[in-house]
Image (cartoon, rainbow, N blue to C red; front, side, top):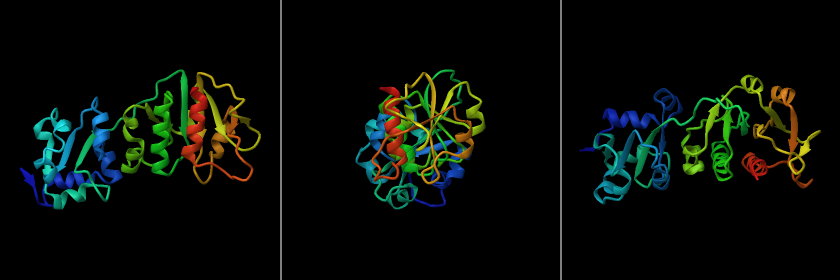
Length: 248
C-alpha cells in the first residue's frame, strides 16, 4: 500500500524524526545514503521508507530483502520528499536505534569533544576515528547532536563502527585516565608527546577552544605545530591529525 496522505500517522511519525527532540524521544535516527545502509548491514533498521517510483523499479531490492515487510513503508514521491533532509534524495531512508553506549573502559585511547558545535566536524571526526582505529569518542552533553542528519552523512557508516559515549566534563576528570587538553601555549608538540594506553585528548569548541574547567583540570597539554601565518586548524582537521598520531 502506497501512503499518499500527509494525515497518515506513519508519515507524521517519520517526518517528526527530522527534529532532534523527537529523535531523542524515540531513540531513533535516519540514514539517507544507500551506500551507508548497505555498509551498516550488521545493524537492522527499525523502519525503511521508500518513494513509490524507486519501489516500482526495484531499485533497493538488495537493501530491503532481509527487512520485515511490515517495517517497510512506501510513500508517494510527492510526500516522500518531506521526509528527507537532503534536497535530492536517492529515494530511501532507513531509521535505526541510537548507537551510543555507556563508558565502562579502564584503558584505551580516546578523544573528548568539548562542546563541538558543527555537525560536519563531528561526523568527520568520527570518520577519522574509524579510519585510524581509535578506541572511541566521548562527546560532551552540549556538543551538537550526534544524530543530526548532517553528522550522520559526514560520518558515513563510521557512526556504526566507532564506540561513542556521552559524558560531562565533571565525570571525565574523575576517570582514571590522563586528560590531555589541546592548547597553543605551555604545551607539548604532538611530535614529542608519547601517547599512552590511558590517554584522553580534549578537542575544544570551534570558537572558544577547550573549556576553562578542563584546562584547569587537565594532566598535560598538547599542540599541533603549524605555520605562524595560520591562526588555527579546523576542529575536524586538528582532531584527525591527533588521532593519527595517537594510533600510529
